[in-house]
Length: 180
Image (tube, rainbow, N blue to C red; front, side, top):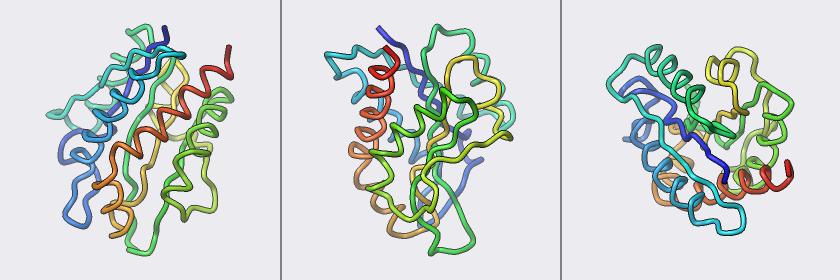
């Protein structure tokens, strides 16, 4: 059985806001749905744990998350986020990675998630500056589930957290099958 850490990417009140939504709250809903979707797979059994330190500062949350993920016996870490922009026209999902294994996981998730939240020229992006990607021992990706500052993205994610989660879960399951 594979174990997956689901990180709610920002502590409460420290992430992006837009269109009446707050990033931590939206990602918390996505995390619950992702855990359900992952644990429903029968052919690729996955245990999922939600990692959340809502009352810490953003820096404290990041450090505590990395410690928790590295202390667990996880095969992967999925950090959930919603992007923000000064332009309400910015839209679309993308998946960030750091390592080569992360790139493969990012591709599998993006293949399923990004058609639902289109708009980004690059659906996967290598990032060398993201703490959670650089410092976790298991393969890790950061999933930007659309723009919270784009009315269409924000509303679609709010109304369809199960569809967003299932897309991510299918990508994870495909990655694990690809690994075996």
